[in-house]
Image 1 (cartoon, rainbow, N blue to C red):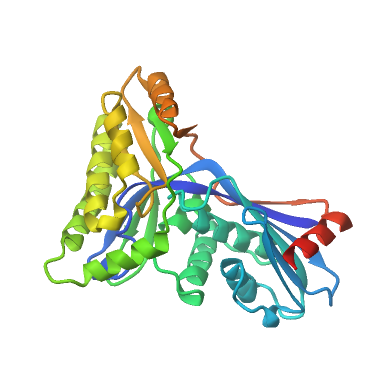
Image 2 (tube, rainbow, N blue to C red):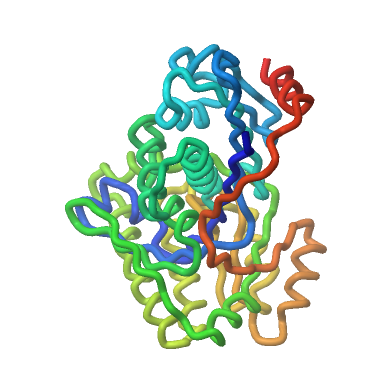
Length: 352
């Protein structure tokens, strides 16, 4: 047997994040601009001899779970990964599923969405299932939102599966339509050159924030709906700016999107990011907290000639800085030699 492997990139939600989630996306329609970056979630599947049971192991969490069969998984430890195995692994099959990620938890880069896409792709490869990247995104998101009941939208899954730079349109009444943005090479390279991802090590819990936003959305005279309308408009304006090669306009849309993200709910705000913005504001044209807010990564767009100084100043403040390289492949699969018996047994021991 071969080891069946997949990886999927995480994404930066440059504008419109939050408008992809119901009820707003269904009642008003939404718009998101995001781009995939070359930091990945990985999943690998070893098909074991029948009767050896199911083992799931997360290298990031250093946790695992075992069961005699798919139907006997308890849905507790590693609940997220168990949900995918229960949906996609045929009863009676024995597997070892292992996962790992390039990004820390709570990074705001859609890491769980990327992990879900990678797991779907690896399991599909292992069991001979063929899906398009868009179908992979929809299945991964359905397992998160329906099977597991996690709140949120689906832009993370689309960003991970499709790769590249995308405008994601959410149709009033329900439904998502991805529109890849085919930008000139000069615009794509300038976007990478002037963009930085900065991590203050203050992680967020996106599920809690999504629940806060949902509760605020239902209140009379809540600013949440108005903020979401502005987020949707900023995404439309950002897509237009990118297609026109107007990167100053793109940076302004980053600022508008960040300001309105903070207006969604107080839990979306982040003192560490506000302090960092104040520290860097003379070096950057735009910034945005990634994901639902409350911490994680900040994406910035530097002024011409200020990239190096921005990196140094952010690093000196105690933050971690990553350059941005856009991933145009999206979810990718391959096979390797199977795990050694020692590696399998080690996962089994750690899982128990």
